[in-house]
Image 1 (spheres, rainbow, N blue to C red):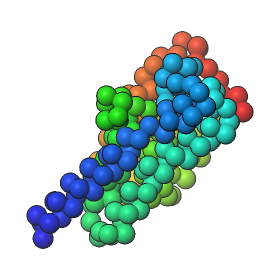
Image 2: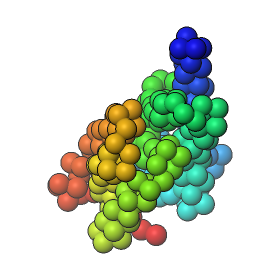
Image 3: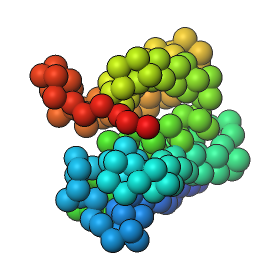
Image 4: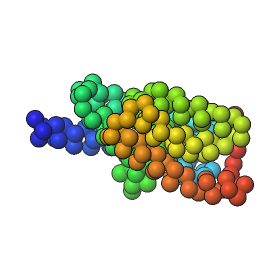
Length: 199
């Protein structure tokens, strides 16, 4: 049984990683005639697509990146509801987005894909983190500030709500990667040169 589960875990994580690796923003940008890697901040995430390709493309990128995390985790929940499979699959999908095999292991910052993962794993924790995100973005208009703060809050929310070791470990890894991927934004925030979000 353990060997069978290990094989299922490996296969599910590999599939989730490949799904997560699909560069939604890059593909949507190219459909609009731009290579988003050479536009704006150079990031393939929803915020940069919103700024460089327009609101519709930005929203579609957000939805696509979110689904890359949500769908595999829901599938893992369905097939193995009483195991840690869903948490590891979520981490694999997230890592696929951030370290995409199709982009030579480069990728986005992971916020939207992490959102999809945790909408399936812990919707209430997402609600807490989203509240923090919205308060900060609405007050100061910095998406990066809201994203970093939300990532920092998630492990605490998951610990309080679940206290389960695998969930907490996965959440901590995801949060740490999201924050590290925002290091340039953090530097600009400190220097007062970060771009504000305009609706």
